[in-house]
Structures are given as structure tokens and as C-alpha cells.
Picture: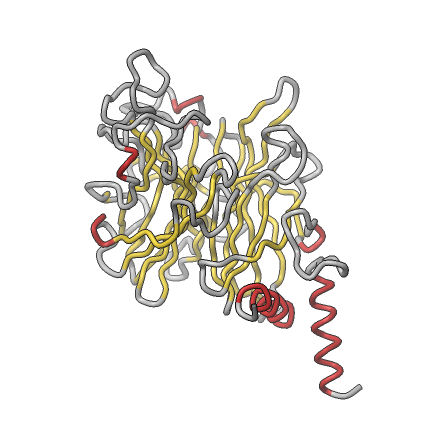
Length: 395
């Protein structure tokens, strides 16, 4: 076989390995890519009341080189019983010497819990006492620049009337926004004075009839990267019934904590991806990989949602590749968080995800976080890049 023939054969094999249907010129969210992933079936962190969104960074200059941030309810619904705590959801910190653990969760006063006892865990970011941040803190996404950690996270307040959404006298629903924070140790954070991303028309305005969201607003669920001298941030927002929770994009070339330095590039009626909630974006070589958990099949509000992957060269135009089925012992898996690392000379893509309890009656809570992984083959990545080029460049 000639070198050219070998390259062509490798390219064809790579496309088959990425589960592309031969009759289709491009994949979509209906394509089942579950076989590409290796799952150990072990829990990374478990035993909590309802937690998810484990965002992991490798920090090689620390004694615990894997640092993580996740959120939700540790030992009780809405974290009731934590001394001095206000609000509901909160962000917690974790650390490990190895990717599969054992993971320790920050407790308090410099102590870390290694016993898996959620009652000992304490938030590192919790709701403030402002109209834009008094009920929910979550969806942490962290980038490290030099020795500083930068976090973008979701914040929810009761909006200008300070009345909880749906309560008597409420006129403007909840205020969903994205706030920023910075830290030297990943535990103690200084926050932005104002939201770093806020859809201004949401302030004091009634929500749309579809639910507790503001039209083309309710910015939430950020995912953060630092590259090319700028902070890059993708998020979801309500883009109407047809486009649903869509993925938007913003960037910042100045001060991360200064709201005036942020610029929304894609949102309103022009999202990066329609129907793509809970986005997480990582870079692997020339491609960005995005993961979300939109509805794929069925009518059940939770089982119908699957983890879906998309790729992009520029972060603005995305090619959807397909979905991943839930673990055999989980009703549904959601809220993906990815990590790209090198192992044994290969690039590995890890995906952390939360497993829903399910059952009858259905329990929407997540009681364990797991990890799946796959190796990113160089030829396969070139194949995906070629597919993206075909979809967006060669028209």
C-alpha cells in the first residue's frame, strides 16, 4: 500500500471510529457515540444530597495536583443546617492526588474531609445578600492564569423587587446572571462587585410565559477558557421555545472581574448552538470540544436529556457529533465537565458527569459523580476538523 493509500485508509478508519453513519455526510445529536468511551463505573465523589458539575483542573505545582469545584446540596436540601449559611445552592472545593481519588472536600479552617462525610463540608462560594446574588451559586468553571485561579459561576437573586420568584407580590421573577471571582488557593475567593455577564433587560422585568426565564436573557451556566490573551466564556440563556436554552459566547481582553471589560459576541436570536444547556468547553489541539445535556429522545423531562458533544475551530460555529447513553445503573446522566490531559504519550479526554437517582416516584437529585474517558487519536481529530471545515468553510 502506498503512503497516500495508507493515509486514506487511516482517515476512513478514524471516521468509522467516531461513529459516523455512512449514509450521512455529518453526524447529529441522534448519533450514539457511547462505544467510544471507557467507563470504570466507580464513583469519584458520592454520598451527598444533590451535587454535580465537578470541574477539574490539573495543578502540577501543588501537593494535590487535581483540584475540583462542584456545587449543590451537601448534606440536606438547600444546605439547611450549615452555620451562617444563606440561600440554597453553593460551590464546594475538592482535591486529590490522583484523578480517581480518593477525593477530599474542603471542610473549614484549612481542614479537608477525607472521610466522605458531607455534613462536614463547607461552601467556598455561597450566596451574597444582593438582588442579583442571594439564592443560588453554582456551575463553577475555573481557569488558572499564572498562580491565580479565576472562576465564573452562576448567581441567582430575587431581582429588583427582592421577592422570591412565584411568591405573592413577585413582579420580576428571578435574576439569573454570571459572576466572577479570583483566588490564589482555590478556596478563598474575592468576587466581582457586579455580575460580569448580565442581560440588562432582565432587571426588574417580568419573565416570559414559558417559565421563570427572561427572553434572550437569564445568562447562566458559564464555561471559561483563557487563550489568545483573552478570557473566553460560553454560557446558556433562554432563546425562546424553538431554540430553548441555547449556548452564547462572550470574551474579555481586560480585567476579569470588571463587568465593563466583558463583551457578548453571540446571544439573542443568534446563539452558537440552539438547545444546548449546561455547556462545558475544552480545547484539545486545533479543536474545541463542547459538551451539553439537551433533550435527544423521549418525552420524560430528565431521561430524554443526554450528554451531547460538539466540536469547533473558532468557538462560534459548532458541529454536533452525537450523544452518550447513561450508565446502566443510572436513570440519566447530566451536567458534563471535561478535562484534557496527557497520559502515556497520548491525549486523553475525561468527562465527569452526575448520575440521577431516578426511581418511582422520580427523584431528580444527583447522588454520585463519575468519570468516563477516551483517547483523542490524531488522525481522528483531523477527521473531525475536516468535517467541521466541510460544514462551515467550504460552502
